[in-house]
Structure formats: structure tokens, C-alpha cells
Image 1: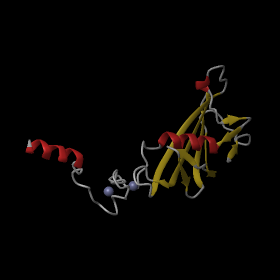
Image 2: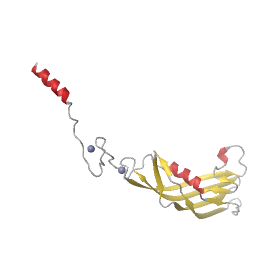
Image 3: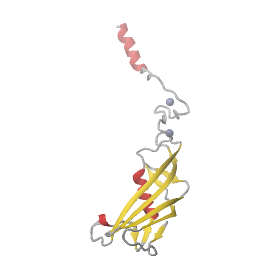
Image 4: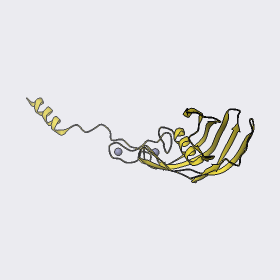
Length: 169
Ligand SMILES: [Zn+2]
Ligand SMILES: [Zn+2]
């Protein structure tokens, strides 16, 4: 887990602090599959801007995920640029909108924040390529490697026997 201690960062209203920090990215589960960040830590740019009523936190990083394609289950690679923003009021009061859940005791939980920001940025389907043909619904073979179709389904032989019988009557 990567956290950032903010106690040493003293900003006055209107001032900004920017730093790059190696941040650990957690693997994530999606549709029962596991997607791994490669590498597991990425350089993330943290920007802190002090306003008169509170502080704005911004986090930016690029992440690469490896995991199974939704359609064909082969390895898929997904590159995602992530940028997220949080706000913490000087006096947040009872409203959750004025505080960030990632800040506790002057420590900013970058790993938890990165995990949530990544989850929000994911596409509906992770594919090995946008036109992945998937698996054949009949025989289960990979249609990217062996494009084929099985033609019209065979007519049921019992029915054809009946039709023949009807024709003879
Ligand atoms: Zn695929
Ligand atoms: Zn097939």
C-alpha cells in the first residue's frame, strides 16, 4: 500500500505542490477474472492545490493491465490513462461530499485511490482486440485462429423420416 504523508507539505491558499510518487497498483477482479497491473508500481503524479476553503488533490498515472479477453480468453493488454480528483474542505462538517475518503490523519492513501479511479476508467469489456471474433458457440474453438462456421444445422433425421412417410401416403 502506498500512502503519502501530507504533514510536511505546508501550502498557503493559492499555492500548489506537485510530486511524482511510485504508487502500488492492486490487481483487480472483473467478471470473475483477474487483471494484473504490469508493472505493479507506476510513477503517479500527485498535485495538491490549496484553495481558501479547502484542498484539491489530483492524481495522474498510466497503467497497463494484463488478463483474459472477455470473448476468447486469450491474453489481453489494456493501456489506460487515469486521472482523478478529490476535494477536502478545511472544515468538512457532516457532508461526505466535502471530504475525501482517502485522507486520514494527514496520510493520503494513494493505492486505494488509484484502485477506485482505475475501476471507474475500465471499459465494459476487456478485449484482446476490438474485433475479436471470440469462441465458436458450437465447438468452442478460437474463431480468431480458425475462422469457420458450421453451416446450417443438420435437419433432424426423425423428422425427415416422417416427411418421407407422409410423401408416400
Ligand atoms: Zn479475444
Ligand atoms: Zn466451431
